[in-house]
Amino acid sequence: MTPLARTNQLLYQAELLITTPVADDEEATSRKMALEESALALMELALESHLKEVTEHARLAEHRWPLLLAADGPAVAELLRLRDLAGDADSWLGWLIFQLDRLHSNEGAAKRPTHNSSMIALGSQAAFADELMACIKNAKAEIAALRETSEEW
Image: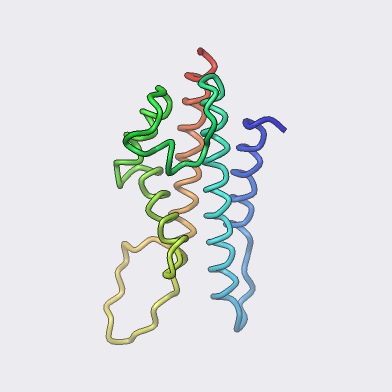
């Protein structure tokens, strides 16, 4: 399988997981959190597959995102573009990296719903699944643009 095909497969699988319906039973919250974190882990794999894909021309030995997107990473045009996105907390990649850091921590990334009657609910708080779907959608658009740039090389 090519890196392009693998990236597409992982993005598709992440979407499938995040849109999987969850039965309303005593395990619903845990199942939903497991699906969210699984989809997030697939997004990490998709990111690394995409990095491999757009840097094929550079013949890099390493494709782990923390190394390639680090400030002192390789000076490849596609990586420079992604580093700029990674530095913007409001971008899909900035959000994804923040969530990946949480995923690898003891805290985890999935949000457990709070049911504290003394807390005021915030209507603007988006569900993690919705945020992840937006991330996937925006990632797909950026990936398409980066593929075009990479193919020109």
